[in-house]
Length: 393
Image: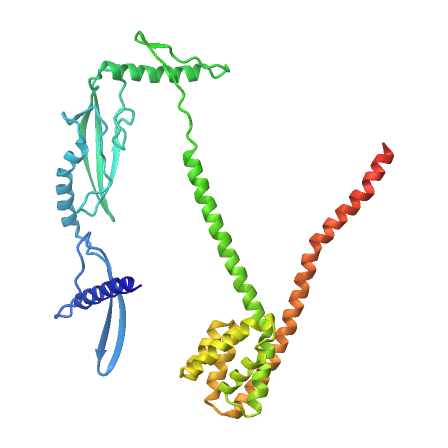
């Protein structure tokens, strides 16, 4: 705990120092925009004039370059593009391996759009498509468009798609791929697929790659873990609900006792001590309320302020107790007459809530009884139908 606190304080101090030093408004009353890539930011300003004051929340966007600047930047970025596109092709612009067509370039605000004059040879994604047995060279025009807002500027490059030198092993694998594809397509009407047995005189040995269920077991383990966690969370919510219902059921009696004791002239402190003594040893029904009152009385003994004690009592119980303790704290400061009126209204409201709660529980019990009644109906139907069916047969 101490380590966590120390680390948290260090980060807090670092953030505080950083925010204190950072300023967006210079001495001339100017706010500086970041260049492209520098990021947007929010700043809060206060303007004062002739005794009046106003605050403004401003969102400062990055500076938008002029068209002339964009022209220069596009030319510069285009010159740097060839080494990126090459992507390992040693005889660029003659290409035999896939190229890299980026959609943006670091340090430049443009989005790059690509198109190809022959998608079957070089696609707009940079993929080079060649048949190993085709040794012809093909000319392809690649167009690059630099886009920023309404700005557009395009450049064209002449590339040559050439067949690279394949090793014997690579050629055999390519032929095997084609042979398998051909076997699959030619056997669509058959229930047997005959795979190629040889390629260029080399025998092909096939083996099945078994599916590993380890990943599935990992997923099942994580799923079960999540399910158990949700079940535990559900049990905690149910326990909390049961506790809150028990406290709410005791609320009308609690408020009535508070009213009786305070009408007799007792202070809030003595009232809570007296109610604690009343419920002590009254059975499991009052156990939760007794524990809360016991903690409250101990705080009185330890010298905690009455306002804090009543607030803690309300927060540790349910919403009804929280509201009552808040009203009690406020009205204790305003005099006895208003306090008595508050207690009268609260007692009436509490018993009305008890009647409403009893009504809801009765409706819930009726709904819960429907399922057993349906089961009994099915049992009766079975008892009637089986003898009738046997007699009919």
